[in-house]
Image (cartoon, rainbow, N blue to C red; front, side, top):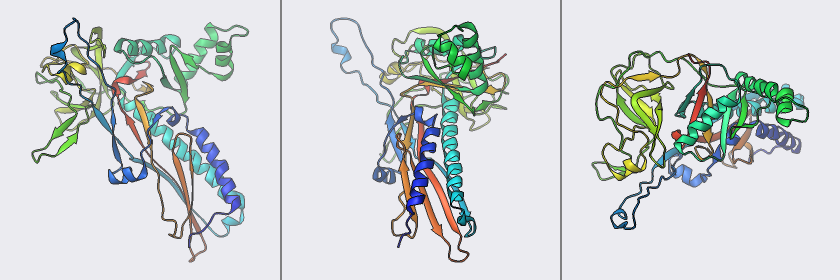
Length: 420
């Protein structure tokens, strides 16, 4: 028969769970998608989520020739790939102190919340492709306004924009606000002075990180593209030789370069002659398109994001999702943007980042004592307990299980400060 938790243990679990939920600062900023347990199991814990559509428009009264234009719905995989566990064993003597279990539970919940926040922050920092390079330290409004401008010229929705800032960068901005706007009765100034609070600035809701991913300086040198016609053609599905159809992840492209020596995942770069375009109007913004290195498969290939969609092939999907002015020329120079090691301060529009809560379901008659609680965001914490007759000790574990996905890297980015 399964064991049961005492009423006192249940109350203690509820109390520490409240602290866990309060600690989910970063993950609570992600949109949520609920994947039911049966579907998760039958699909290998992976669900394909739709990317935002981009529509086309045409001029003239007679549109007869344009009704056969195809709209390609692109999707990205979201996988329940993160699980964090805090296991421990209490002896029969340690359990004489009833507060011991509660204190360890608080520590477990605090660690699980921290793990989730770090994973969310790292995903945003490593996959966002709109890169803002600032030559000086963080100073205030102008820094965040640069991100606002970058999103505006790309046609990113002006609502629900979020930004995470490393503690030092956040406090530097707060210092600017309290010094330049300080006056009695000025809420912005007083919050900045008394609580080092930046709040909503330049259309971004800002949040302070106690941990921020540190992106080291790019060490690649003299990197160029070594082949022409390296453009990408989006497609919703691909068909294998056997006739099997499967979805395609269109967030990435493999390009060929002269050398990948010292190039690493996370490096940010531009390509000579390749400007960004407004996602909807397709007009040249006059700014070079920024890219990220996702992985380095070989000495001459890089997986990058976003793909180079120049409409070089002229197909409907290329026109629909075009993101650059031109296909890069052979030997086009790559310029690295992260020229000094610094904290990565990620930002995104709300629809880009998504969390997919998962759940473990231990068998009720397996001899385990099981207790669960679910946050407002849908993340479930599972606490289990099992006793050992050999030494009268008791094993405890706290688990969380979830997936994260950046559905649209071009709707997310990062600011790097103090870059020469």
